[in-house]
Image 1 (cartoon, rainbow over the protein chains, first blue to last red):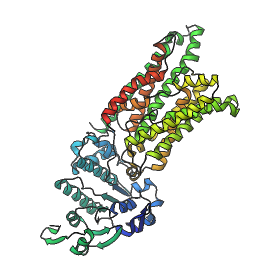
Image 2 (image 1 turned 60 degrees about the vertical axis):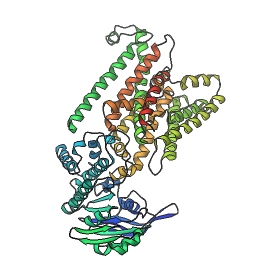
Image 3 (image 1 turned 180 degrees about the vertical axis):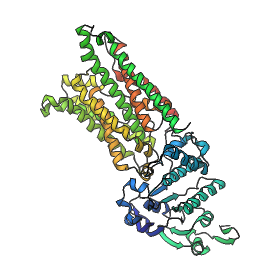
Length: 259
Length: 336
């Protein structure tokens, strides 16, 4: 029971943004997608999230085509964090996080508050709960949406329901400490709650450190996929980014740098 | 403050608003060219004339004003949320204009349809609802770009649509005869002076049901604030929700315009007042807007009736006098 894209192609106008890509996200592990700007990473995430229509191919969650499931059924199986900020009215942080309360089974108000308080403090936004979202910095807003997505997949579900969290550059607005905070939390929920993570990220060092399975895209096509040591290599990365990339195995892990 | 305390807090405020709304309605029933003692009427001590004034003239008028105010305010809140645009108002973005065009077309062309008189209270509201439905759909089609809106685009498209509606209305004015023209002008200014039970009841029922159904959509409308894709990820059937919101807000505006003409700015000001004082989430926002809108309109109509006795000022003039400066202030705050 996995989340997968099978030969997915997405055309926008006459342009092919994603070209026949297949990818699998397994519960309990972090599947990382890297690639240069414009590679089609967010578009592929849109296909897996179900909000972009496929030109051909299939997106499948737990054996069923995404298009066969209602938004309500889908929201109990996966949460998606996009890189967007559309709020124009003064919702409080608490209001926004509570929008993630789409749980399948009813729980008491106290239990909801406990989960929200717990996750908000893990995301480092517990002191902001009563503030207006519009007063927050970009990084804080991003963590609010991250927290909302965590709340969404936190609820009690059928034991058989596998859940997935799709993240589009969740750390783009974060400082180095919060970058680690967010990704450590992602790792924790993957291993402890058996949630499948699909992570689009630009920072190759973070990708290498936190990822379990790696995919590399360029110009809409899949260039490589597999384990870290076969994918995150100097050859593959240098050719994909068209820049000399050095990799170095140190005592603390794989280091990837360009100078 | 936790969630439960907040609920109680906004519940209390809404209760106060309910009391204010009720008091405004009573005041508007009692005050007027003939001042009435409601207690005497209730105790059966009033003259027959006084009872007739209350039941046939003042009651339909006040009830209509309260409903139209509530309905326009809720439509304003919904359109602001739907377009994610704090400057949206049914009047400014052309939805009222579309309703007016539909209604004017029915006034001028309706006689040639030769419909039985019993349909008369329904044909104009239906034409007005269709008019505002077309405008809202067109606004969405022209200003949405992959589910995203820019604040200015919605307003600019609204200007264009308003201009088109005026062209249509102008043509119908040109085609109309004297009697039709007089009724057109009276009605374009916005007034509750022609409220009769016969024309009022169907529209009031349509507006109240649309408002009630809209309140049930508040959760989805909250999620739409995050963006259409985000709402979808949170389990909202975005397409169905958008269709319902457009249809129901068109009923709110169309039925209101059909019975009272174009009354501007209520849909703009009221939701902002409620956001400042009660809550931003759409459920308390819509309930609060209905109550504030109802009270405000009843009081504005009372002012319109009393300020130049025995003559009457169009109520649209009163609301625009309050609303236009508020709009200017809002522009400096939002900076679109």
